Amino acid sequence: MPTVSRVPAPHVREGVATLLAAGEVTAPCAVVDTSAFDHNARRMAERAAGLPIRVASKSLRSVAALHRALEHEGYRGILSYSVPEAIYLAREGFTDIVVAYPSVNAPAIKELAGSEALRRAITLMVDCAEHLDLIERAASGAGPVRVAIDIDCSLRLPGVVIGPRRSPIHTPEAAGDLARDIARRGTLRLVGAMGYEGQVASVGDAEGGPKGAAMRLMRHTSMSQLVPRRAECVAAIREISDLEFVNGGGTGSLGISALDSSLTELAAGSGFYTPAIFDHFSDVNHLAAAFFVCQVSRLPDRGWATVNSGGWIASGPPAPDRAPVPCYPAGLSYSPTEGAGEVQTPLRGRGTRGLRVGDPVWFRHAKAGEMTEHVASIVTVAPDGSHEQWDTYRGKGWTLR
Image (tube, rainbow, N blue to C red):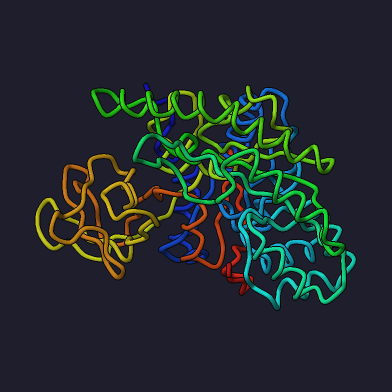
């Protein structure tokens, strides 16, 4: 059964209510329970079984949150979203930054290549010769630029592909060919590899019934196929170049991925906040750490309460599980004809009893870092009731591009 605690702790609710009443915070606002954040960091390190975890910055999108994550034992380096973000983070003092996705942002790559400090701190991801050509043109002879090869980890069955369609590098032969191409180029230095099994890391295994059984079978089949193939791809790359790191896994697959001896490190980010997507994972024994709060703006009818904002919808296939989850008070649900709205969100159910205009209603986002795109800062609350403000990327004026 799922073991995620899904509601804000009393000290967090009371702390934010006090801040709202005093006018020190306005809603909608994002909130992080720092004790739950720290608990989740320890749990992920335990599941990683000794492998260091690279922190996925896209899932936190706050410099203060990244610092707090990296203060925990078992964490090393950052897995970044884009080259501009990586440059921002390097200038904030972070080092050992791997950009998880190939970039075609030539001006940003040129900026990176022209700085010795940035070249030392940042590694770019590649999966084809076109990426190599683009980096070489942008670098204009500067270098060497550190690169890593992205290995496709999708599950391939007859007539169907399950998992992220990330990379064309699916076989050891393709991995070796790309490694040799990199080695021939003087402006590039091959230092790592990455293989993310998204169809395992982001798919729960604790649901009941036929759907849950199908998900567990898919996860098992995927790892059974992937582990030997990923190891062969890594071996083919290592024949060409010594590698500093081989990265894999995610919050939802840390325990499984840690068993793969071809990996030298894992990745995780969402687990610090533990959004609603992890409610159906059997081994994610976390506490919900991140929430957002909206206030009741009107009471349109008995059994109904409307809050300001609320429609912080997650990316991915449009579906009910992309909507935020109203989590406190208990017993709230959406109107089937309106759902979660950009400006206001009507809610119904027993949880509306006793709500008054101005009262806070708590939500959990379906994902992690996307919540921060709606706010300039995060209110953090400690067990003793003390609070801080963590700037988000949005609050710093950063954009992920």
